[in-house]
Image 1 (spheres, rainbow over the protein chains, first blue to last red):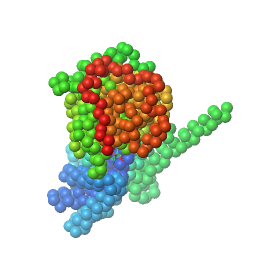
Image 2 (image 1 turned 60 degrees about the vertical axis):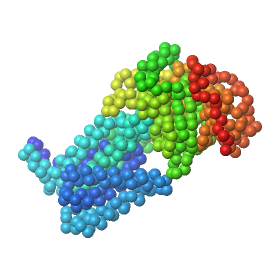
Image 3 (image 1 turned 90 degrees about the horizontal axis):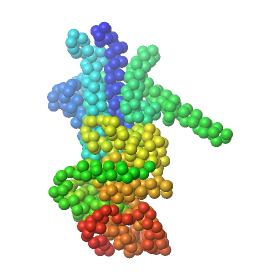
Image 4 (image 1 turned 90 degrees about the vertical axis):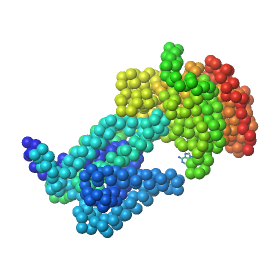
Length: 301
Length: 305
Ligand SMILES: Nc1ncnc2c1ncn2[C@@H]1O[C@H](COP(=O)(O)OP(=O)(O)OP(=O)(O)O)[C@@H](O)[C@H]1O
Ligand SMILES: [Mg+2]
């Protein structure tokens, strides 16, 4: 039964997509609420530098060293951004826009100079191809398990532990940074931890799905979930659910239309966002329209 | 709706129990003591050479024009911004050691009211410090939050999402969040901004009750007309401390002019320095007030620049 699961290519692809989706949505929810979802874009570009540097130092193309390297590069991005913003000469989002292209281009430059003949190339880094996750497997307890499934499973579990354990702290730090700091909950440190996890998730996701789908999973499912609930824990849950559903539906649609699986998964997250926007029980257009009409009727009566 | 005598007694009990032994070793003469405080943003000082003494058991207004540094002063006292220089103690101890005894209400505009959370949940946040890292609020905490919501008359809104509240209701929720902290010193940043007269009276009454229970209440306030009827201690701030002391000594035309500079035009023909029309919930000093007043020294009028 389990063997059949691991042998099934569609199951592997969908499961990997779902795990990337869950891992990304969990951190994404807090980034979206904090208004820093652009950072996931910045991070997923600048960690190219981290990937290349770690490869040059250790020769590792993936695995735990790469995750740590990515986390550090992600933090460097944010640190430089905040340093730049703290001078008061540029706004925060402009600072992001200044920092990550620099780091990214250094990364690409190094890649071109030193790593031309190695497996890492810009195309895989940016786009990845979830359709090939089953090619790269490791044996585990007698099963051939795709490498990406393992690393994404680990990241999803890590992120889940993080947001569960620190749910209350993350909530307060995101909602009211000043009170969080006053109560001693170190919101700055929490935020850096969140970004370190985002970076590690990004690097783990690159092999499997590429940066574009990763960014879509960070931003879109939480944004859709935001429209259908006003409880934070439900937002986390719905975001993860939407990511999982997008993974299923994206695979199905891609096979049907014979197009890129990753691209279709990203499209599906967008579709769910539109659905939430239209049909959300409280903030959806239709619900709001109905409420307005009812109010108008009540006034007319 | 407002604090009942029994709940007031209970609050005093909590405060006494919560007071750490260390506070008694160091003289806790002043609720808030600030020395030589300078704070700069990007090399531009927004607070300069601040000396501040607030005795315990007063209701103190911090008043000054926009950009005077009122919010920054509170943030510096609570360690939220790093001062360039200065020394700050609350009840004789650095803030980090008295965190549990301090309640804080930030300016309402500093949080995102579209955040997916409920009124009751926001009030519970005031207890996170007592709950500590990793643990979740339990039944006791939820009940405390409900009690505080009742005190501010918001119990019927407990399950609402916070954006579906009026500005005044949001302010009440913030006040309830500070009440659950059961602190000895409260800092409130413009708690009466954008609220109607009824809400303002309710807020003042609650703050007055805290003061009467021996707490120190420090409020950033922007309405000069009501300063004298609401408060018994006054700090006039404009980058520097212009004057501080009992409100009746400090609230003078000269001091106000020094604080507001040219912007005071509207005050010139006003009746702002006449005796307050009605005592209101006003400045009846709390127990031990006179004794403590000595500690803060005579009212200090800073050298006019
Ligand atoms: N994060 C910041 N970065 C840069 N400058 C700041 C920052 N926060 C405040 N300032 C500046 O510091 C000065 C004091 O600000 P502060 O918010 O303390 O004033 P305030 O007295 O509370 O004003 P208001 O009545 O408008 O609330 C202002 O000139 C403001 O522009
Ligand atoms: Mg302010």
